[in-house]
Image (cartoon, rainbow, N blue to C red; front, top):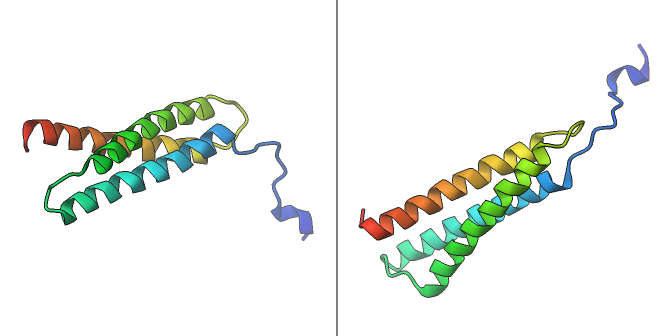
Length: 107
């Protein structure tokens, strides 16, 4: 058995936009969950800095979804990071939207 039989040679690489999408997704999800946790610690008394952090996390998630879609549109690339970035950012957007909805309508 040849030593090279276990290797796969390819020109594919991970798109930088997909990697950035995944990084933005993780940062935005962690910051949003941290803002929610800190507001629970203060028994619902949300400070302005936590609200701004949640808003910035939502904006980062929108940018991450856009970067993930742009990374996924490239041909002959690996799609792990773009798809992972799209999913993480979509979860962050849904969570952020629910937090805003719950805050406005008092759920």
